[in-house]
Image (cartoon, rainbow, N blue to C red; front, top):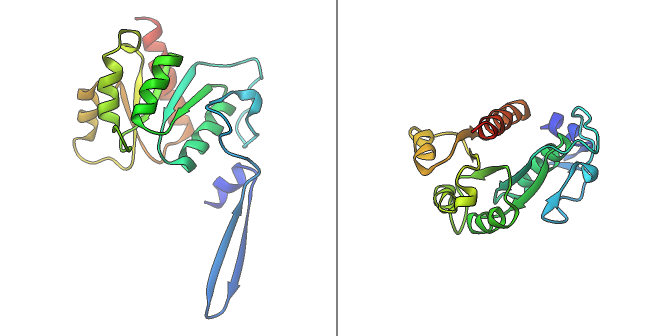
Length: 181
């Protein structure tokens, strides 16, 4: 956890009183998501390789109901050069996907309103989004989850917590595969 905080340019303080317990305070020099769209120009430096400001990669929609995880993914992927748009639930994700037409969707499975399976089926029903790569993002995998994702129409599957290298490789593979189709 300390390494993650440091990668974000933050710090950790500890306050401890014998017999009363300890308190850990993490501070971060960022504000979180201000708008629904974020690009590399506005992303903070978090210890990842620098990307030139004019090197925007594909637009990626992240649909995730956990704000902490959403902020982390947005910061990291923006810094890696992706144009990131976000949604907090499946219904909002569908509307955002139809409006913005992202090149790739990173979709949490367990969300309020519409879960990732329902959202994927609905997204697949729109011709303009029918071939958009959808990557499932879920908590530690259960037996059969991967198959359920593919049956719902998703293209790949990643378990949380994700490594940035793994995430970028899956993105690059999916974006490449869908460019040549």
